[in-house]
Length: 218
Length: 218
Image (cartoon, rainbow over all chains, first blue to last red; front, side):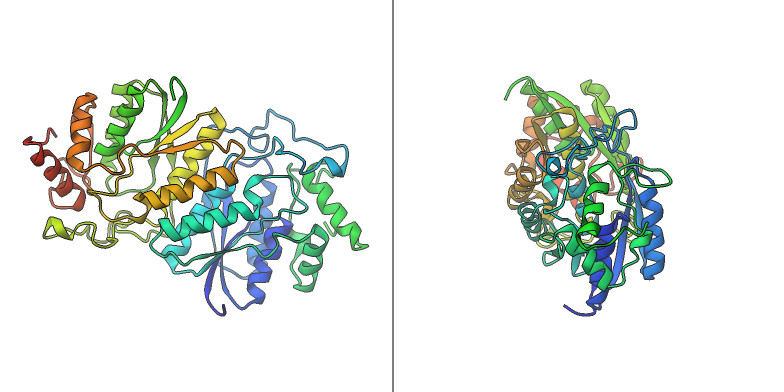
């Protein structure tokens, strides 16, 4: 698939940024889709915007408010979990799970892709070094692919998940090879001047860099 | 399934209003979900709100703006098609198709259902007397059901489509039996003081009433 329009779901984190640069490296015309969904780590939005500017790709920002919360990632009165060991991460669905988040994101991406005639949607879902969210796994992506086939006019839009079976270290290695601007990304589930270093996402990221013998660059 | 929480997608039209009253008749605790998505027939929102008030069910209104349009139902610079014959309706996907609309609506409904612990989502999709939208057919609903199973924490939420195989006349007959307030509903693809009488939706509705030997009540 060369020189075709594609949509990229971009959070501003390490995985989605690497995915954007991966799609760019394939020569696709990338259109980024960014969500302001009331996440408490609003800081990632700034990163997402910095990344699209650096990558020089057009983007759309969608604002959504879920009145029902249902996640520690949306509700600032709750505490973001801080796992004691890395082994605990991904064992079960944590409280940071946002109900149906990737389903919502993919459905907007699908609408966007249909409207602009894009041939694929790239999502940086990863089911190896991840928090255990069900909507990051291959099984879900496959089911969503069938929704595309049966429920849209375009039918053939492909959901691409280049990182889904990679470890965090492999993703970082790929990002470095692609010269993705990791220094602009934000992975922490909290906002602040610096990443907290203690949430799932910070720990997985730190270990990824450590496994490559590197220190993180943010 | 009795006395359980359920979510109802409510547009303010005939089908979704009948669906709400059907779910109520089963004794469910209904929570309506209404979308302000930039539809040019904004008039239906007033109907949806009037219906939830009459039905005395709680509701949430979600505001969405799709920056990409891609449908005559979103773009006021375009013309809503007016089929010359009833036979033309549903033969192919018309320009009023909104890319991935029901997928977006169902994904929000799923998030809502997960967050409040609802057991089912009711949608008034119909694949008999309809405009030919792919996201109204059984095949799509089945695919989306698999997305629920694979991509959410709740897994078991059921997508209920009580009207999917009914004719418009059958739906109207059911609505009358359930005493659904059809006089409050709005089906026309245009806004205005009165339905246009010429779009797909107006024509299908009028024929439904006619087949029962009735005149519409709005």
